[in-house]
Each structure stands twice: as C-alpha cells, then as structure tokens.
Length: 298
Ligand SMILES: Nc1ncnc2c1ncn2[C@@H]1O[C@H](COP(=O)(O)OP(=O)(O)OP(=O)(O)O)[C@@H](O)[C@H]1O
Image (tube, rainbow, N blue to C red; front, side, top):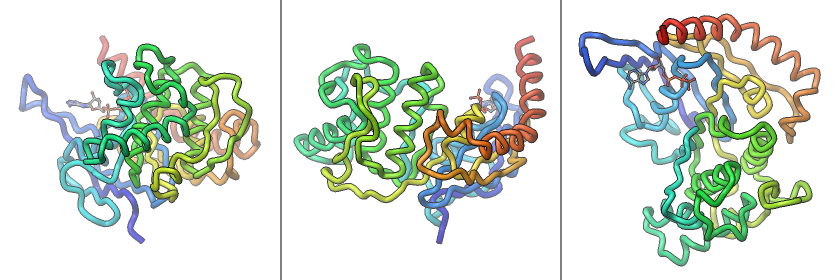
C-alpha cells in the first residue's frame, strides 16, 4: 500500500534575497515517509530544517529536487489531503470560535447551517462546548489550541501536519493537549476522565460520527524539538542531523503500548531505554546546532 506521505530524496536550497549568488542548502537528500494511520515525529536541533520538511509535505514550499507523493500520487501544489497545525496562532481574531472552525468548511462549499452544525460538534469534541461565541482573545492558550485542532479536524484530512503545535503552552496544558491529540487520533470518543473545568475538559464523543465523517486513523507528521514529546506520542521517531544539508540520521520504532498517557509513559522503563538510545544519536547534533545558532547570532 502507498504511504500517506512520502518525501523522496528531497533537497531544499534557499537563495539569499539580497545576494542571489549566495545559497544555503537546508535539507539534502532526505527520504522519509508516513504510513496511512501512522504517527511519526521528526526531531532535530533548532534550525535544522524540520519546518522546511513539513512545508514541503504541505506543498507550501517546492523542493529544489526530489519528489513528494501523497498516497502514491505526485504532489502538485498544495497538499489538499493534509491539515496543518502551526506553532503560531492561526485563528482569526475578529471571528468567534465557531466562525473560526466553520470558515474552512464554508470555503469547501458547505451550506452555513451544516458548517455550523459540524463546527459545533467538533468544538464539543475538543471540550469547548459552550465557548462557541467567544473570541480568540477571550480564550486561554490551551483553548485556542483546541480551537485550532477543531479547525483542522473538521476538514477531515487524511494527513495531519503539526509543527511544534504546543510549544507555547505551559507544561500541564501541553500534556493535556498531547493526550487529547492521541485520543482523537486513536478515535477514542468516550469520556476519559472527569472534567473540573472547560480548560481541562476531556474529549467528548459524537463529533465525527454526528457529522458523518470517517473514523479512520489519520497519518500524522509531528515536528518537535522535544524528544520526550516525540517518544510519548509516536509510532516512529526520525532524528535529523544539524544543518546545513540536514538529513535523517536515525529512525526508531516506538514499541510502547497504547493507549498512552504522555505524562505516565515517561516512567516506563522502555521509554527510558528508548530515550537514552535516541538521545545518544541526537545529542551531538543538538550541540552542533546550538554552536551554529551562536555563530549566527555573533
Ligand atoms: N525562506 C528561507 N530563506 C532562507 N533560509 C531559510 C528559509 N527558510 C528557512 N531557512 C533556513 O533553513 C534552515 C532550516 O529552517 P527551518 O525553519 O526549517 O528549521 P527548524 O528545524 O524548523 O527550526 P526551529 O527548530 O527553530 O523551528 C534554517 O537555517 C533557516 O534559517
């Protein structure tokens, strides 16, 4: 079966805007894939080219050479089978929560009433029932992330591309969101734990089923610089070298049982062993990446 997303021999060379003769090869000869329904994380030192690879997979950036295939088909233009969750807030501040979630559905041609119904169901599913009319500035950081998640999932993409989506959150909210993403990805719809407040609400059922979408597991490409997060969430972790000419230098199957609680799984001896193994490959690259950042700043 074709991979959901395949990057084959990708090289990305940027040209300096000020001096077109000056070039920087951020990524070189990189091949990586995400199987249908697979959760893959890519980790690497800061500035190594993680977002560049994700942008290539999203079709937002064209590779200098190499091929991108989506379910076996060469990607041309934007990857319409993928939803994209950025590190930065992507909500429109002038639109209410529900309007933010509805906008993509309406853009796809869904009548307003139907778009509203689906958006409402998704907001409920990410624990935001009752917050439909709030504006982004009236929500906490975690709630805004939930809204972004609803926005992406409402479009029922087969592939989800996530670029450090929770790095701006505090540790507790971040772990909650990570668990929520895992539960949504795994198709869990039951209430998993008691909810002391909306901010801490668990997933509630009915979203996807109520809106007639599919319940199959999505392929996820998750970019992070946080190795703990990568191991806790993924089926597979790909380690990138420091730049320039970044490329994968290690790939590790994460054989921890699911369902996982991202906080608890860190105490599992297998997690500790995997962490030590992967960190053994990543450590030198992180040091190289850090030295490069210092040089750039000097
Ligand atoms: N449009 C561009 N023009 C020139 N150089 C670029 C461009 N986009 C990215 N780069 C460079 O390519 C390299 C990789 O950038 P990228 O943002 O992909 O790294 P990253 O691993 O996602 O970084 P971080 O960990 O900081 O999020 C960096 O050195 C960056 O400065």
